[in-house]
Length: 165
Image 1 (tube, rainbow, N blue to C red):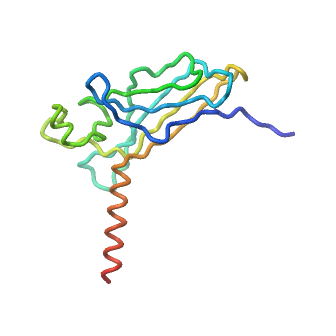
Image 2: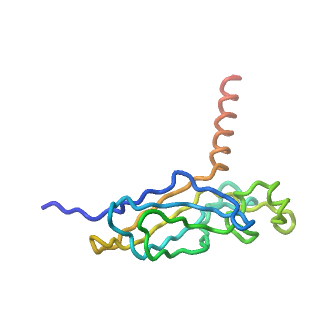
Image 3: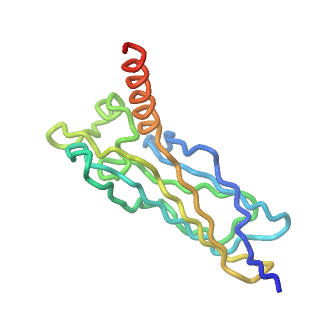
């Protein structure tokens, strides 16, 4: 006998974006239903960030911090839905904003401290498939450019060290 379950037919945005909305920066991702003609009902999105405090040593394990969404429930996704988080001084992903932007908009932490390093953002979408009458779950990880830049810098430094030998 062959068993198969219903898989979530969800298309996630390739990149998460940070954009101004109502004069405030917002972290946004978009999802779309790939099932033609049927609906994703009672969709619920959960997000969290994997962060490492700036003052921590390299051996400290990163921690997972929940990200509060403007609206985490969507009663119906027929085509697409955008889920947003307003980035403010208390946001766990404040570090996504350039320091110059944070200075200009009064979003510096007390003591001029740097926000935690954001390693990745995890998104989990739970929804009810109206056609198959079952719950489906889909997830996506977004890696930040900070980590990619840091990894590229390390790789470049190793290359320099190897070529100078």
